[in-house]
Image (tube, rainbow, N blue to C red; front, side, top):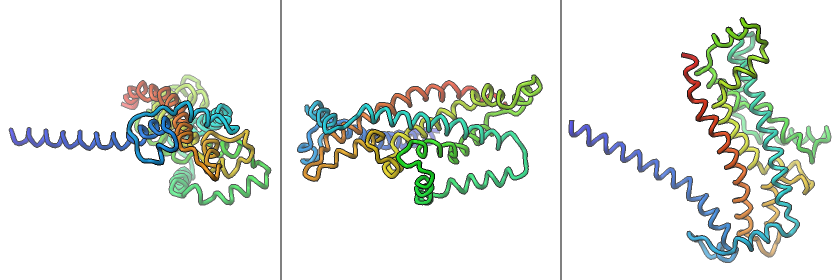
Length: 280
């Protein structure tokens, strides 16, 4: 009895140690980012610093100088990320519900295609995508950055698996008996039930869209349409000096909307956990 208690305590201690290590791995880079945002370029070049410095305002002046339109970048990134998230979550949830609730010919084939698409790297088709956008004259436009979000294979997979674990078809059948239409059932019943999965995928989609640099960099040429990551990259444009302090400050500022969005959406994850008992 005593040996099993000691073994349990050792296992618990090891779990705590691993969790602490993982927490440090996640926290230290963010901490260093915030610290470097307060340091000058010279201090950053000298080596790692663990304490904040006094050059935050200097970095801010450099950041907002040189024609750096930070608020325009905020607006552009917010517009793209919000539109992308809304389209991705709504239509992916609709697709997931259709694959889960309806039995039709070719259902398994469609599901297999979605799984195959998930395994293909996004850059594989980018050259063809760019050529297609050029032919229909949608370069330097936000449409190619937003509209493809409708086809979110990973989001469809996650939401469908969540629905299969918590959603009861008896609830849907009862709504049909009461005379509810399919779109009303989806919007009024399915979306609230799947809110934890939708909130989780909203966070991932928003962060992915907000931090996306490669696609906007290839498609957007007008500086007024630059996203925030693209604007931060312009601080490296000086061949004689790279303002690392300002770059770190710009990256740190770009984290603020992500934190706000996460804090807003995370409550839906927590409040929706109790819905898991619907299937039982």
